[in-house]
Length: 137
Image (tube, rainbow, N blue to C red; front, side, top):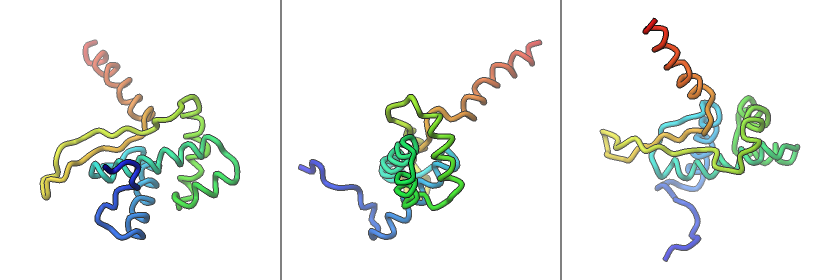
C-alpha cells in the first residue's frame, strides 16, 4: 500500500517539477484559473492552498516563505492583500478542480484549476440575467 508516500513525480526531474509547479501556482494566483492535466492540477492545488494560507496569516516570515514559490512581486502583493481579505472567513478549500475531458492530441485528462469565489465569475453570472431582462423589455 502507498499510504503517505510523497507526491507525484510527473515524469520529471526534481528541479524541473518544482520549477513547473512554482510557475503553475504563480499563474493560478495571477489569472485565478489555469487549464492543465489532472495530476498536475492536484499537485499545484496543494502548493496554492498553502500560499493562500500564508497570505492570510501575514507577517514578514510568511511573505518570505511564499516568495520561495511565487517569484512575481505583483502576484505576491495580491496574495497578501486581495486574497487575504477574500478568504478571511474560509477555513480552507480555496481552489477547485473541474474536469474538462480528454485532450485531443494524447488523450490526457484535462482539468480547470480555479480559485473559488472569483469576482469575475460572480459578475458574469449577475450580468447574464440582467442582460436577458434588458432584451425582454
